[in-house]
Length: 320
Figure 1 (cartoon, rainbow, N blue to C red):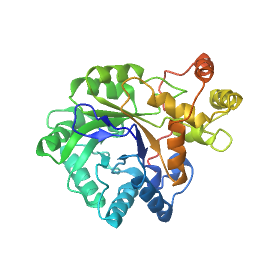
Figure 2 (figure 1 turned 45 degrees about the vertical axis):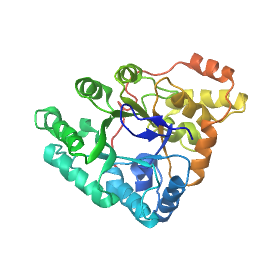
Figure 3 (figure 1 turned 90 degrees about the vertical axis):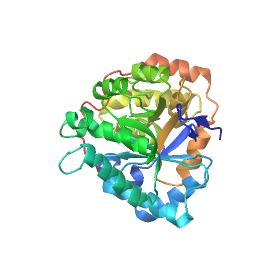
Figure 4 (figure 1 turned 180 degrees about the vertical axis):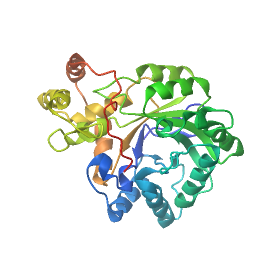
């Protein structure tokens, strides 16, 4: 799989990245369980695949995602050559504290679980859920500490990973990040991240687009997974999904292939992060990434229209 440079860093990554929040067992978010054996098998299959990029976070599954990844790395005797691991520093999940000392503490927790000394790509994660944004953005706060970690070499590159664009975009404008992760805001259903992505591209910030399947429904289907952006969806919210499914059925293509390639083919897209929770999804994702999609599919989908409002405005947030 061809690799591309991650922004202005010395890292090279594949245009696909596997996300591992689900591997930490987060049933409140995804609606299903993932046990340790399934996670271990999936992680080893990821490391054996042509994809060289994996994303996790300190708080995914209350730390289980990183712990399981660390166990898989130790089982192999280390990461595969050239593999790029991305993780994130998180707020204190009980108090919401997200100051400079919490950044340092969160990273130490991650390094211990993962069994590594440095992180190729380290993001500040979900500041919109912290108790006080000033702890993050103020002088001597979490963001200053994140950049200090890069200066110290503990993080090779740094990024910002979050949801709400009204909080994210101003921070992005003010700081020299290497990368960003946005989720659910650039999909077949929603294009709210367009302006921010254009801005990031103009500054050579690597764009990592997560959740191209709108939380899974565009991959698994509206009948199997009637949830849009992690929430149970009524018929009105499922209507555009079912229209996409109908168009794809007419042209004999998988909706998941269309949803994935929509993200991958965007100009200046560095990598698309796809959540994986079982080994067979790895091969399927790679097949979808290379599927032939008739132009008529794109034309008909464009006629449906798309949302530009916050896709998680009505979400009942649960971290598990």
